[in-house]
Length: 303
Image 1: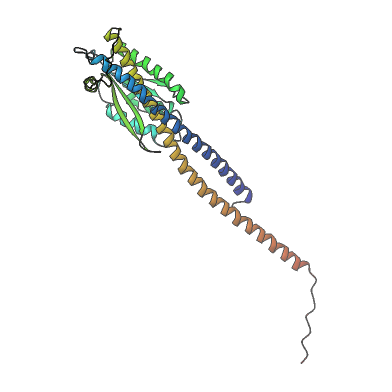
Image 2 (image 1 turned 90 degrees about the horizontal axis):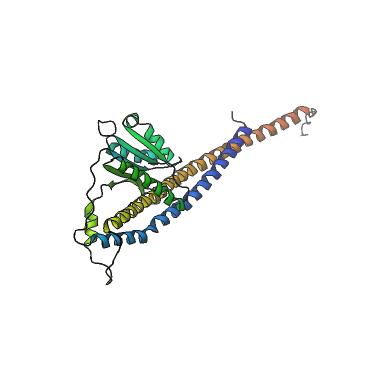
């Protein structure tokens, strides 16, 4: 039978867990909005980069450079550093591994896992370890640190291109609601020329035609690097927002389960305490009756 002390300790432990869950829910709710604002703030910068590319590519004969021949494939994939977010890492890992045919005979693959937990999920795939290399980066702790992470990813992309990598893919989870998300896939290299050609063919938004003194090929290279920066920054911000949304949903479920369990433990504690009180009262009454002197029977009533 459960003792009062045992039930009291369980109740205290559940209350401690309840406080932890409330704190994590609050942190996740604040973080979601932080990373959503980071992604939203990128819109104006993205528009500036797009106008720069339009100005460079609008001249006849100015086109995106043809992709250099290369071998092998590289994948940049965003996940999480921490747990308590459901199947966030497993979902994106399964999608990416299925898409890139891990376990089949193919060219050498390179993976850049952004997130310690995600890297652990990838490392569990033995076929993946045998046929490709894995690099790991930690996620930023705040929106202000995303830029530094993106710069490190860009340096890795440069290294891959120098090694002759012919194709680079990007995977991340994008939020679909406050707590939902879906895996997203995008090709980073080689670039699809159609969106850039469509942008170049649009009318210029003002009466002032842009001019530039830098060589167009050099300027195009710098603008394309900023284009990659925008794509990676948005992917990181969206992934972090989706992560905290998933964690918020997990904490809400955990909080509900803890509340139900706490109510059950509290009810059991009250029943056991009431049983103890009743037992003690019965013992007192029994002791009193045993200690009381015997009284003679009452005389019968006269007729």
